[in-house]
Length: 484
Image (cartoon, rainbow, N blue to C red; front, top):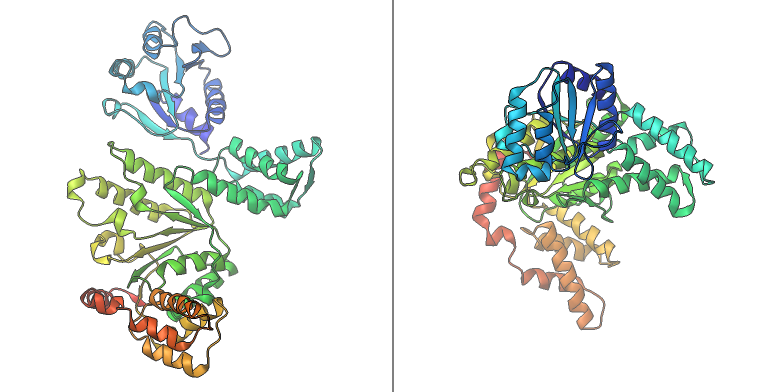
């Protein structure tokens, strides 16, 4: 059922109070008027600047105050829809909330009050009375009409437009999940950069959409100059698994892979995998930091997560990276009035229902703190344990970091480094290479293998400093995870 049909059903079934969450006000009003027109119901609209008015007629005197507007409605004894736009700042006023409640409880036949706001902020007093309804994003047909209309408008304004039908399809996909007005603005913005719009501008539109959806600070578009998965040292099992999923997905007809959980020893490449995976699959990488979700007011934290997840779905296809997932969804949480449990419930529902175009990469250092509901089979396609690199993997890691810095060592030196770095993580190996560069620079000479060995000798690796923690992680992973 489309939005207009849905509204027609809600109005026709005589719900006394609707709460509509939308930032696409113009589109919602158009759909509401169409639905009301079909039912032969007049629409009254209230705004803080104008007051309460029917259609384009003059507003009723003195109704810019919402309390006065609700009082006026009490005396109107006929079917109607009353829309209060951006009412949320006034819902902190107990008098206004009480007036809404009394009107909804009176429930005059054929009258519906519609409250709109950019986010869901239903007062506790109206729970059970107000029916929440979200305006779903424009579908592909709406977006296609908008895209063609916008491009035609650019041509009329003497912009060069060079894009074929395949490009139109890619552009529709690029603006999927945002409002029509936002889509139009992003296309025009791309055209204004150089006076033309071509297939090459679609990537700019997609990037601008990601920035738009991450503007609230919860999500972050990660643009890193890392390489592909081929430049990850070791982790052959994980790379093979990802390679098979990518090939099957591109071939079509296969169910898309949905996500992985990477746990293991810090510094062994979990975050690097997320970055290189997105680069390899040529998808945008979006970081969700769970620590940014929390807010002091009741319901605000859960609302921020819901908004972030809707934005993620709008960005599909994409890779969602949740770094240190235990920060947001740890087990327990009894001291936070149930916020952690509600967050977890919201996230688990999204995992079940999310867009198939979103591939989730979650990383965890303290996996023991994660709730069992998150780890059960089916939540993730696979749980991988990232252990300390073995000898061949350490040699590969040295090769990558030395090549990155144009350092050339002999085979003998490389083999010696691989042996002497037992127990070192990938991050610790890189730190030793960087430290050796400074050591050589201070002596005004080329770097030697012995410089790297000296740096490693001065380092206490995590495998020694936190040997008990490493052992506990390995014991946990023995029966619960697949070796990466």
